[in-house]
Image 1 (cartoon, rainbow, N blue to C red):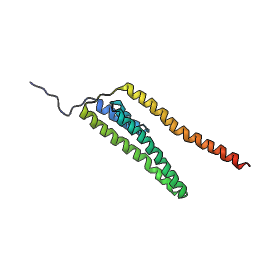
Image 2: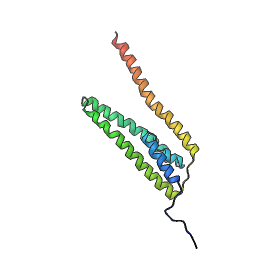
Image 3: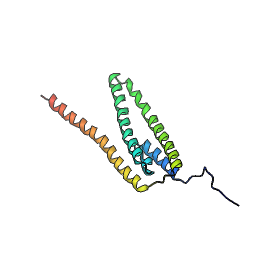
Image 4: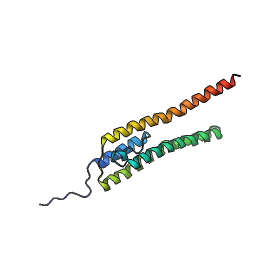
Length: 145
């Protein structure tokens, strides 16, 4: 008897990469699954693009809320579903990429990428907070004269 492997059987690399991409993407670190399988350019591009999109996605509703005297706050409701949909789409595309290329994951690069991503996310949160604190100190000191 001659047994042949089914063309639809895959190892777990495609599923692992997809789960990493979706879970990390939901938590603001889109692209980690791509880095896991060795496609660093796409992974870094997705991560940086995701950070920019999150920043713009927070800036526009804030401006809308200010201009519309609070009515624009409802636009914040769109951000979580868009983030989840973006992460799922990227995860599914990654799964297809792994199946088509046979790429294998590397946990070391994933760990390094997650550590760097967490540091960048902390900086992305801390810098505006420090800037707002500085503006508050300046405006308070100017108002006391």
